[in-house]
Image (cartoon, rainbow, N blue to C red; front, side, top):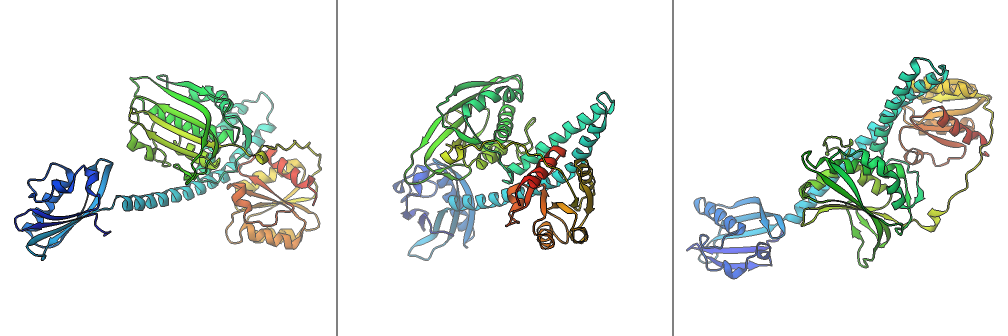
Length: 494
């Protein structure tokens, strides 16, 4: 137990004869003189008085040490107390009682457990997304290849289009999971947040039920330019607005207000604390979402931003956690609270783009290339090998395939003279992608190798310190993405 915040001695008459107070009682609007020389029955009515009375009564009935933990309401909200009482041998005192406020310690412990759960969910979502992306390679690849071979008015074309649309939705789900897990490669570009919100208003309104509308309070173009992955922010906003709207009962109406304006954080001593962590002083674009009317309880907000918890109707899989993940990806901050008027506020701060970030590279013209030689696919998934083989054949390669790293190295050694490209899966049993990569480099140092994974590029390429002659292909992919990655390898100077 921590050092007691208050120690109480009770004499043989049942009166509080001594009280060592360290501002503990102020949280319960009590002063020491209100308790001194009073019996436990005479104490002013308060949660602390009831606790003192109950625990001393128990010790009188059974004269042995007694310890309990309880939660009491105070002027600053619910607080957790550890109480310890035991028979006293000091003078004529009969009971010694100490009360310890362990609120902060317990909150810290709960936050540590919560963070551990969040990290576990992050790992789970990352693994699930990777498996989904792996499976989608075969589904999307074969469907897209079949679509190419059909005449324009073939009856099966409609079914294939619907299959591809459904697969795109699953790809979007995997993308959300990757974003939450912090395992998504952001495609950032300089943007004005007010313009982005204005352009996406029809999409945001479309996810709302008829009794909830969006009200634009302010879209200030003076907000600083930020580096945005617009698709990721869009997903997070849609999930959050849908969740906010679901808190409004169908028999009432409400307006969700949106506001974009500049915000300058000028704290000198410490950074500003948000749900993501601390953000430094500086210039930010503020996106402020609010909903008046008491539709959302303050106690619900922490659960709102826990992934997979928010299971309201029409909410996305991870709900408002998608916006939290999007904000984290953009190095910003997010806070959510309900004020004294019962209005919900969600504030997203995105940092101003630096001059270096704002420099845009000129688009490079496409360079023609002619596929030649043998392309080797090394992947433990049969569906991936089959669809990649057909795609590479269409591009003009002679194609070989292996289901393990060991078999891939054997084929590479056997056909080294004609081998010009390897499509290598990152995660395989036995000999993994990184080990197979090193073996391929020993066989042919200048061999073009295309790393393919359901994980993000940043995570996948960490395992390859030397990326010369190497490119990355995100799963799932269709033939245009595969062709673009191969083109990059064949037009890059080795």
